[in-house]
Image (tube, rainbow over all chains, first blue to last red; front, side):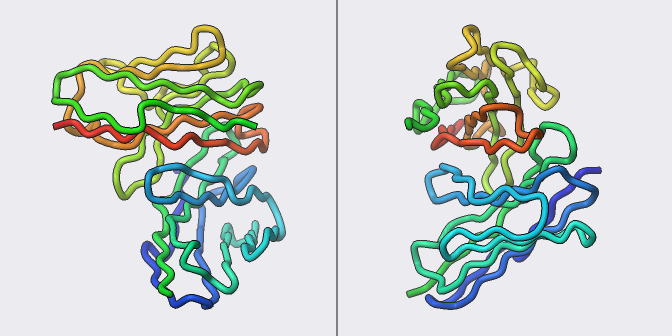
Length: 108
Length: 116
């Protein structure tokens, strides 16, 4: 069964802290996506990766294919980073399977 | 570049009523998706269109939900009649090609439906 699991479900941190959100998946994938959802519903795609590491500003996404695991890191976290971060995977077909999300709250 | 447009943003109806949502994807995007996101859960794909044809509607409750994309551009999703458990955010997304080919999906702001 194609499954995507995220941890933690909720994460609260102080401004400036280094943040790590984890994602594991059940079987081989063709691509792994990290998405950001702010209150109100809109979703923004942050990264799509199939191997290695990608960086955009203070955000870094890594994936380990052998361990079926991906991480999203945020350096120098800021209150505006507060959102729900969702991991999603393409299990070889066209449909994205989504995790349940990690609710991140950064306290000033 | 304009993003994915959805309307309305919010809708409140009573159970057994009908409701329709509209989506206009990014220009040139052949693939359009409708998702249902219940509070506290990840989005669930309801239907995927490739141009004006249906690629996947395996999770669409066809006894009450219907969707169309007649001209291969904008799309409507209808619920008739609505049930309490249909309360959710309905997200529309589009991509240049199907997501499995490594293409990013661009999401609209969603329509928040409350069924009373």
